Length: 223
View 1: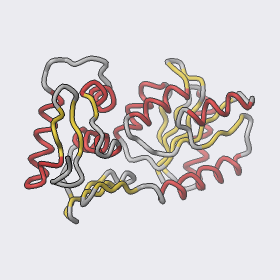
View 2: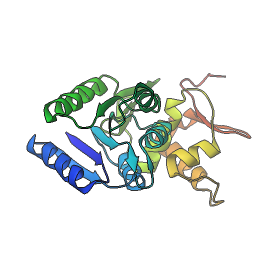
View 3: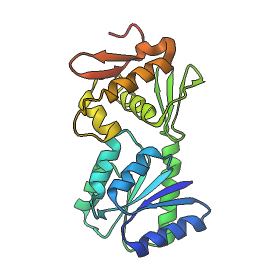
């Protein structure tokens, strides 16, 4: 499995990389939240090991941003904070499990494997004939694989997570492009147009909601 490790402490980061590699898995190390978010959103990771304290942010903020972007990769948060309130904060922000430092390697590996097993059961998202495999980052429509670029996939996934509810332009720009403002380049509309082209006769599935943004329709006769 591919394990993204987000840890700024050089000693602990190198240790975690070695532990994961010795298990025959593939580790990737990021040393700050910005890099970690980019790699978490653009790569197909099986699980993420996340430190609570990072030089440019914290674990709960990372989890919240990743979940709002529609990325459901399981997250194991590492921290020296052992209070119940801290554990609750971490889990409510979107982390799937919590391990207090110092920890035993055997427990770390057991928790990682358990997270991957559970996530496999939640990997598929269906909206009518549209099926999104979030582990493989692959979309099929009526059994046919859609040839989507990374941003197109993320945009379609974000709309699918909302089901038939409209998603605002501001939310899509923030979650898919990490933009806090509209750059005025029409980047969102261009990607929606490309998505509709790839959906072909099912282009009706992406509906423009005037004054709001877009929504994904499950049925053609949906009001």
